[in-house]
Length: 217
Image (cartoon, rainbow, N blue to C red):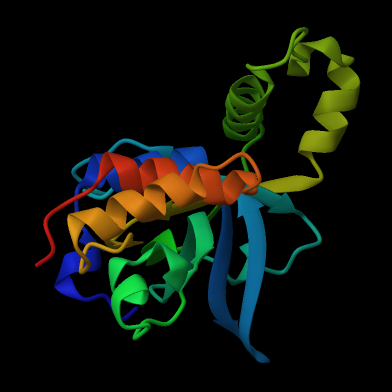
């Protein structure tokens, strides 16, 4: 991923924060037919000596050939897309002075790399689905729990999935927030993206820009 120094994000807690906030990742790998991608909701586990950048965990259908190809040393890439939005030149001061501006697109993304491991263990899978469920149900008025379903039904469904674990060997982030522009332009972008008529992703990007306004490099 091309990433100028001003857009590079290297703080592990910030990278993990984006994954936690935007957990649907695109897992890209090679198979017999070339590049392929699977879209999976992940959890990110804390760093360990074995995985100093953290570990991604998810599950796939047993019918998915992904888990059967796991276990080698080849690295997969998981892409997490954070907030993003179109940036109009109308928000730049130079547009008012000379008109010499063009649009762009700003965004925050994380690329996580590591070998894929398959975990075919019912207890491990139950723990994973319980954690994922608790996390995503937490904001609901009456959160659903795995234990709400009959135990035999859950046991049957667990047999139809396989766990995926990716100990990360490398993780990179790109926060393209207009850091190469003046503080005035950055503040103007943040204000424009925060307007009520903007979609949710744009408003989230505006908040991110506002929290990271920096002098132009």
